[in-house]
Length: 292
Image 1 (cartoon, one colour):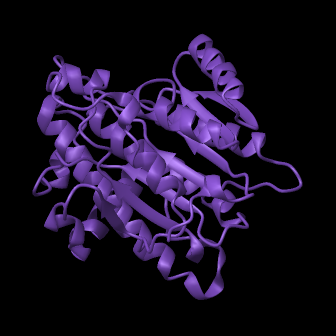
Image 2 (cartoon, rainbow, N blue to C red):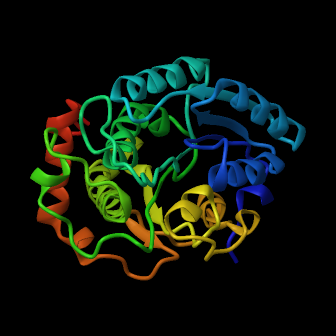
């Protein structure tokens, strides 16, 4: 029988990006009812403050709101610093990082502040940077398996396009369904490669105990789904996949695995391709995982 966090006496510190709307907000609400310490993120300070109060009323032990536009890597770095500062106490740690924020970019493809396809920048490059910056806090968790959950999708691309296309700065951004599907495969590949990197640290503890998971959140009638595909999913209030993956500590979840959406793309299991993606992310962001 699996044991969920809500059934334990443990209160955990959980950061959820993109948590003022949609699945992120729903997940935060469920975690609030379990009494956890929540760190939520969005792009509208007034809305963020409102959501924070609502989550406290639902039972969260504490709620802190952080504002950042993930389409700007400078703001992603600042978000990481803000979280680090907020958690700098005698027991500075983070137990769960949920890279939930994501965009579908119709009908006019846009570029990020640094010049990349906006969908790729927000959905892949931002989690890459934020996760690296917060790894020391996750390693400091007293949990047996602190976790990083990065949202992928059942609509992920079957094969990864050439990296030169994905990281092109001068080209017209792709946008739309193709860009979204590529980014969701990128999230899966990021998770697989990060799991490999952290497993190398397993004997030393710390980083090696961190579990990296990815999943399909379900076909859910969020604003993003409605904009891109129409009303073809379930109500947001039934979108529990993210919450389940974040709280089910009794399940035998191997790090680097994809949940709720079948087997996913074969490219995510290709060591050469996942490593190449990491190397290009490092080159374009200036952020490395090689110093762990």
